[in-house]
Amino acid sequence: MYYPAILSDEGNHLLVTFPDCPGCQAFASANDNVLKLAQGALTEWLREALQAGGAPPQPSHEIEVPPKARTLVVPVPEKLARALQARWQWA
Image (cartoon, rainbow, N blue to C red; front, side, top):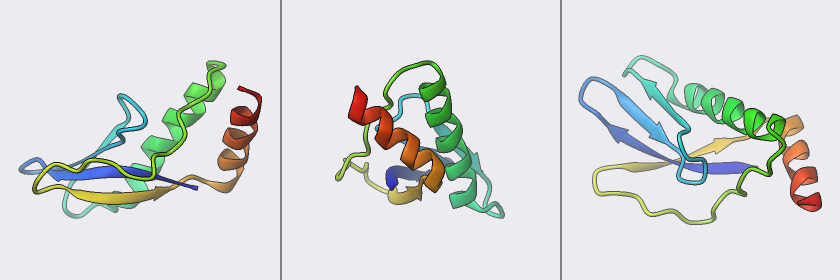
């Protein structure tokens, strides 16, 4: 399972945002592992949504990417992906 993200250059930093997950974002510098930081932010956001009892949104197949930004595909850890799928089945 993967969530699409938007990667944009914010001057001295890179910003990763997740259109499907409001408020979920990660900042990285040029030397950071952007994918790892993005995956960490997404994982925590999804876990918190599950713990709150909600059903987090399912990942979009397509997102709108602003000019000069790029798409980043961020994997969800397998155990968390299974928990999400179970929640969506019962929601």
